[in-house]
Image 1: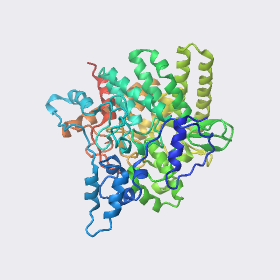
Image 2: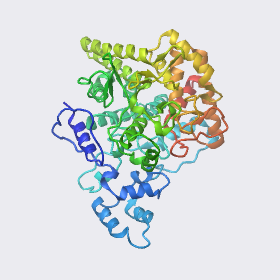
Image 3: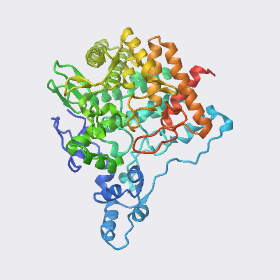
Length: 541
């Protein structure tokens, strides 16, 4: 039976215009928690006018704003005033909502103090305090999109004013290097809280993210904390790890071969693998105008297109030619048709972490059960994703029953998590050296499409995983080369601008990264975390 809170989520989704539940689910359990409504649900009509009217350059601005009155009051005022001569929609919004700010405090880099001082200072700049659920006297609490968290946390920076799931692991790498164990534990506790409340870790702690998760790094987060505090953390967070696993495997037991439901795909021979998925088939609220415009250019039914777009956002790679049909652009996106190699490596790691937690708990039978699941996943994934001709791990299209021909840095995940054979690792290392290695590090894909998760852009988390994977398979020289080039690029850009950025152009290191739906962001949580870790490896203190 579904967790009560997840059934609440399904009820929430069913209330969205046009949302449909296509997979069979268990009967709803008694509701024990109310899933908060999103801005589009709270402000129907007004929401669409604001987002499609582009009164703010970034659609994320309005969904992050806080209403000054109850929605019913604001909607009534809007309906009274909107058809009057001279009505100014932007002025109306700014009078009825508190607009978001990018940072909690103004911050100016001190270049003379050096890069390490900058990194240490940023933990404070990007930190946000605990915000427990408001009491009954706060009549507007339920109408804000920010989901309160019981412990302090770190935001990425810029327009990203909330915690993000997979960002947090790479940020925590830096917190570990800085000895900030308590903050690491706070972040982990927040994710356990979200798992307890919603049955999954949302993309971020916003109501408009409550239909999807992100790459499941929670097992890595717990393991990182256990390095400081011991294996007792595996027991402490074991219920949360199990909840994460249930979320990703929802519907697996009744799934027929050759079909998919939610995040699970059962292959024709019965093997179970996973895909990215979002439960809604509507435009993303934080990118509403962009999605509506893109859907008009696609030949796909709108609901199908939005599912693929949202699944691309759930992958963290929003967006990349990785998800497109061969030779196609964004209009051809097919994310939910693909079994991603990176996602399944992460779930292999989750299964192995649950096995280890069972062993720590003195339950060897349960440990063997999870190990068997991990072994089955590994065998199936390697058989489907390994392309012996290309010497690369690639995503698999489960609908077409064929391997994608797109090579991306997701192909390094089997090295990072130890699924690859030594010979496969050598082939991948050779491919990295020949095709992906650029002056500033490793390029994300081999295609330049103006999407931000394509060439010439590079991202800290993918550099870290490639560096770790190469080192794991004794490819030390290439691992060190990637690390040196990435550190040098980050350091040089910081010296020129006083900023650490969300992503970098690694082909032309004198050019800022571009592409995507929003301007280049500085801050930046995961860049800071990975950079500090690499600095300490290259220049131990």
